Image 1 (cartoon, helix red, strand yellow):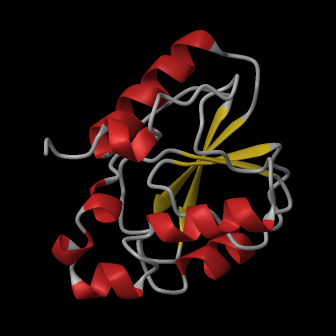
Image 2 (spheres, rainbow, N blue to C red; image 1 turned 180 degrees about the vertical axis):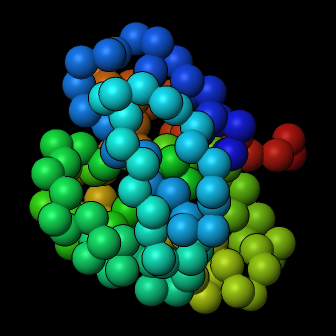
Length: 148
């Protein structure tokens, strides 16, 4: 996920030099990844994947004037004042829940369960389908389920 985020930010910086972007980083991360006038680094106090992460990140971003927040590891804030987008990199926790570590399960069913619950609470805010509503025959989980 870290490499995905780095490449995403690098390419975004090449594509857009006008819009304002906030890169939310751990306060322990001393590196400034993009030095460009429209990119602003904001250090967060909330540790990554902390059990109160969704609440605390909501508070830490409350005063930022955001239009959109991208959560690259599918843990959306609980009280956003802005639109949110999540990226789900792996659905293995749904197919093989017995492999999910206890601490990850306690954090929200390997975190992905929280995004799915959020979708039910606010239809249209978060979607598990690509634009256009395409769904393969048998559903998405059937597409990536093990051979039987």
